[in-house]
Image 1 (cartoon, rainbow, N blue to C red):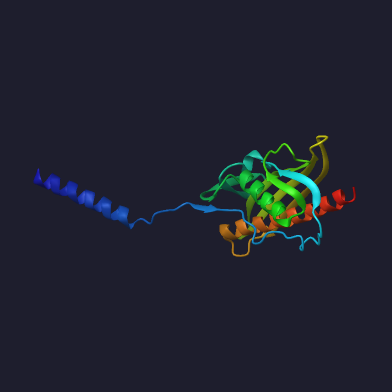
Image 2 (image 1 turned 45 degrees about the vertical axis):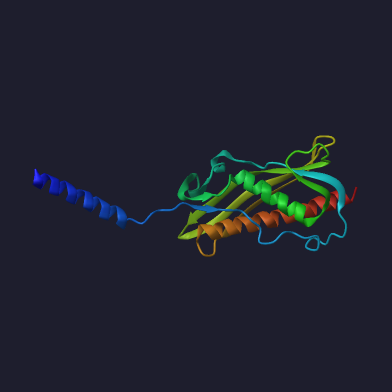
Length: 203
């Protein structure tokens, strides 16, 4: 009996030591944030456009509409990182970042996030791909997206543009992947706002 008790105690001690020796695996969460906001000086705008604008939810393809970050392994094969996740749903994160950039540039009379009854125009869009690409020991950041400008007074799309970029991730880390996606989103939003300004200022 004593021998069995001794062996049982030894087994418990061994399991405890093994458990303490394991390093805890922590999930890592990533955000989409611009390094700086767009200014009217960046776009050479001297006066705002006299319109109220809503920035509404960007839709995202179902394959990328989840917290886990997608990684493309082959042309038609994707997987998802288990320990690398978006801090918020990617659709909401992208919508909010676009809103911050639009509001920050001061191009419109008023910019609202979401639905408002006084909106003259609506900025929205779609995310077709938001992924890491693993290729020959390299990491690439892939963002394929489109913007839509809707005239809310007549419910008509008046300006639509697509952007599809694949860029290298310098340090091959997921943090740098998130930074590259943020840079691409800022770059695309800046270009699209310049297109909007050109079209609406000519009215």
